[in-house]
Length: 59
Image 1 (cartoon, one colour):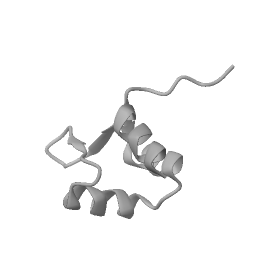
Image 2 (cartoon, helix red, strand yellow):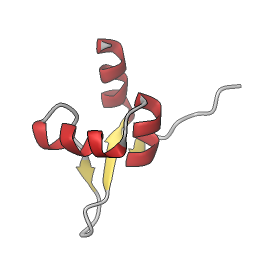
Image 3 (cartoon, one colour):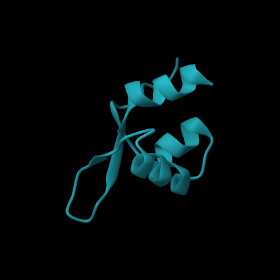
Image 4 (cartoon, one colour):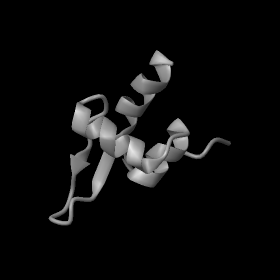
Protein backbone atom coordinates (compact mmCIF):
# COMPACT_ATOMS: atom_id res chain seq x y z
CA UNK A 1 0.00 0.00 0.00
CA UNK A 2 1.37 3.43 -0.96
CA UNK A 3 2.15 5.89 1.80
CA UNK A 4 -0.31 8.80 1.82
CA UNK A 5 1.55 12.10 1.52
CA UNK A 6 0.38 15.13 3.51
CA UNK A 7 -1.17 18.10 1.72
CA UNK A 8 1.64 20.39 2.88
CA UNK A 9 5.17 19.15 2.46
CA UNK A 10 8.34 20.32 4.17
CA UNK A 11 11.03 21.66 1.87
CA UNK A 12 13.15 18.50 2.21
CA UNK A 13 10.16 16.27 1.42
CA UNK A 14 9.23 18.31 -1.65
CA UNK A 15 12.85 18.34 -2.84
CA UNK A 16 13.07 14.57 -2.47
CA UNK A 17 9.88 14.02 -4.51
CA UNK A 18 11.11 16.35 -7.25
CA UNK A 19 14.67 15.00 -7.06
CA UNK A 20 16.17 18.48 -6.62
CA UNK A 21 18.20 20.22 -3.94
CA UNK A 22 16.20 22.22 -1.35
CA UNK A 23 18.06 25.35 -2.52
CA UNK A 24 16.48 24.83 -5.95
CA UNK A 25 13.05 25.06 -4.32
CA UNK A 26 14.06 28.31 -2.61
CA UNK A 27 15.11 29.73 -6.01
CA UNK A 28 11.87 28.54 -7.59
CA UNK A 29 9.94 30.27 -4.81
CA UNK A 30 11.77 33.57 -5.40
CA UNK A 31 11.22 33.31 -9.17
CA UNK A 32 7.56 32.31 -8.85
CA UNK A 33 7.92 28.87 -10.46
CA UNK A 34 6.80 27.06 -7.29
CA UNK A 35 5.40 29.26 -4.55
CA UNK A 36 5.90 28.23 -0.94
CA UNK A 37 3.67 28.90 2.02
CA UNK A 38 5.63 30.53 4.85
CA UNK A 39 4.32 29.06 8.10
CA UNK A 40 6.42 30.71 10.80
CA UNK A 41 8.28 33.85 11.75
CA UNK A 42 11.45 31.87 11.10
CA UNK A 43 10.44 31.51 7.45
CA UNK A 44 9.77 27.76 7.32
CA UNK A 45 8.42 26.83 3.89
CA UNK A 46 5.69 24.34 3.06
CA UNK A 47 4.64 23.24 -0.40
CA UNK A 48 1.21 22.12 -1.58
CA UNK A 49 1.14 18.58 -2.94
CA UNK A 50 -0.99 19.72 -5.89
CA UNK A 51 1.69 22.29 -6.85
CA UNK A 52 4.36 19.58 -6.70
CA UNK A 53 2.20 17.37 -8.93
CA UNK A 54 1.88 20.18 -11.50
CA UNK A 55 5.67 20.46 -11.70
CA UNK A 56 5.93 16.68 -12.17
CA UNK A 57 3.27 16.74 -14.91
CA UNK A 58 5.19 19.43 -16.83
CA UNK A 59 8.33 17.28 -16.97
